[in-house]
Length: 285
Image (cartoon, rainbow, N blue to C red; front, side):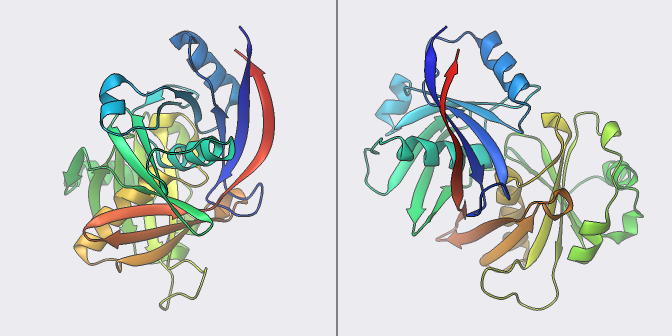
């Protein structure tokens, strides 16, 4: 065991302690898998990441680093807020990407681009592993877990990019905020719920409210979720439920104020936001 550089980053918020925290170990080499999982369980955050050198294949593809992403319960092939928070911490530590302006992350779903835009970072949403309509029997189960009538679900779609998300569209943001799901009964299911605010939205004010019930991650409700917002944007923009550029709010029921920027540019969805470092130092691993 030895001291390793560490940062705790608040993602999707330019104001400390209002977004989704992420633990980042900037040197994850030589740590056994069991120790990685144990540390992530100990931090008890939605995710903890470990930065490693890219594999030979990743380096050949342009990767600047490789990242492993852990929840308190398991390892994920991809997650959104860890992608942005890790890139933020890596850049802040003085690292320079091979391609100026673009960081290339290697993870379980392959290579993911992260671009800088003003004071924000944005990642290219990876392709969905599962998409398409939700079967009525599954929809009934999800509605029951949310304690709502299935008729209140305006539309639904599988939007799995790694964590297993299903997306449910409700009629309004107020409907989303009122939900009282039975989190203890999720049993590994990951349900994302979204609803529109009235009007077209103003500068830095969200047009949609999102909530993430992350049973597969073992965290109950997640404060602000990049992977879910990525999948929701791919589905909703494609289906005409959302414009090509919009803002989503998340975390209000948990006392947070996350803001996610969603943009579809030349067919590619980008998911972005601000990040703030709240803790810096070392950890013994």
